[in-house]
Length: 230
Image (tube, rainbow, N blue to C red; front, side, top):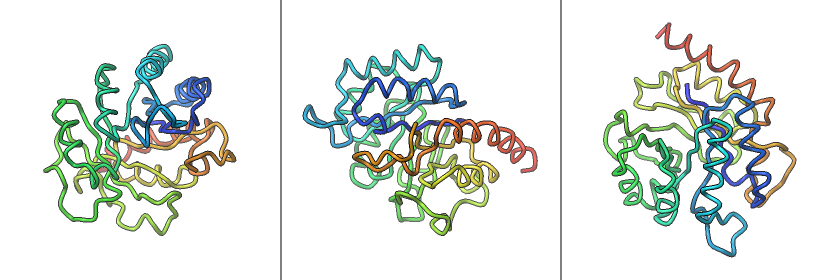
């Protein structure tokens, strides 16, 4: 099981807060701290990440011994992330639909890449069958997602071609359900305070450190059990 703390844009442009989110993600049991690179980016944007900031984020992750990962939203974001030599990449579902050529550029890096399909409405997989380098991730791109939105969640991850699950629900129940069905990758937005409204509104659907620790402690044996009874 890979547990991803999706810090995303929840640092709200405050890089002291970014450090604390990385620290708390590690202490809460996450394997990976993930940021979004290239989302409406630019020097005048609150969420702008320049090369120096990107290197700082990577060094903080190394200090806390948690893997760094980035969602690649644009070609510039790929150029920003590539020198950091991440072990893996993430592709948001919006990018699958709006910029499939960028997805192919990321896949050409030869790294394990997780591709969310929340916006993908066709029954076929967009970039060919899954491989050990191309991992498809089930997602519902509603912010927040509610229980009725999870219709269609794979009954058995792996057998259905999906490797993992990207969550936008309140709480951790959706993640635990996916793990009980064999998901091996779970991504959950992460915050220190759900009551922050923020520019992008992701805090309310994010896990707190307490919830992320619960997800780690409950989810890992649950996922192992799902593998044993498969």
